[in-house]
Length: 415
Image (tube, rainbow, N blue to C red; front, side):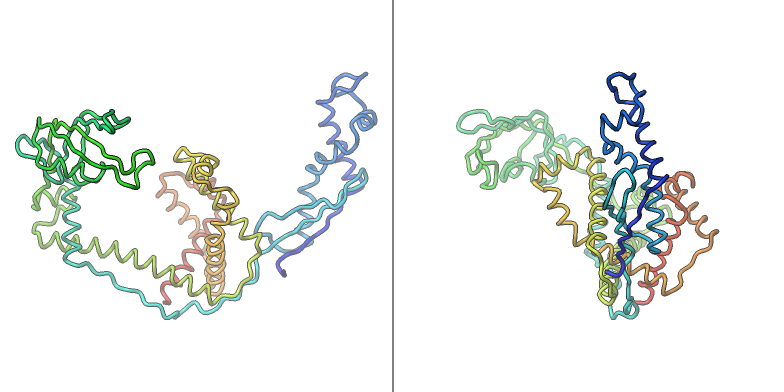
């Protein structure tokens, strides 16, 4: 492929001799050779005893950076992933490196404006407004003891229970003062419905059957539950009035009509954001199809490895190791890699598309604009600019992100 170059670099003469000598001094510190104190064996004796080959890898580490720099200078291309390295030859006189350098592939930007896509305008129905208000009422609802009356759907019943299968107590099927919301479908079918109508202090036996998709040793079996109702709690939703509006943070709303308009606006804003995200994905997909680019498998592999590392970090934050996840799910590293390849390819293509749009539109930012953006980002995260740059790497990465966001805006604005 045109964006791949293999460059051979030879390190020899005095440079290689010094690297070998440095490797000898490092190795010799930890080696005890008969007749000499530890670390005091002359170089000739050390090589005769240990072999000059024992010095090669440490010597390679010493000259690697210099060789890589020479390879980049000769290749005259900027790598987009870590170059691969092959040692073609190595002996006491020289080492020959072969660096395979992969640069960004050539991108031929196709049509990215006026793609003929339709962006919907969000609306909120009366039913959606009603459901949203009910949701807000439930969020502010209070749970209070129900002194009289019977269990109804939506109540929370505090119960003692014990299950029996074949006349024997069911392991793990016993609880005391267990709060069960009726209608939550927490227990097996029939259990919660069987409690409806019971009163505080009432005892009841429920003859039920485990579902066929239950655990192997219980599925389809008859089970008897003995249940005692200890307490009944009901959810008391607030009335829709000025106090309710204030509790939600709406200080200026006085009437139910005003409140409904506000809820409608919130729903529309939320739905419009979802529509806009979907529309942007459609724009990216359509513009990418119009773009011509051949992406090296190595670039996709590199993106997959980055994604796996991110996934590993997400698992770690949940206290799960990637190896444990693989064992639990039966997902091998190879299978995970394969599963992530389509998403990795899409990410790389989208990145190259946005870079091409930014170049085509001559998107530029001044040093002052980049610094101002870094300061804004740092304030949003509640950290200093220095801390932000330490996490990001440099102002150049902040600038790159700004370019990508501007390219996205151009794509949205022109479709």
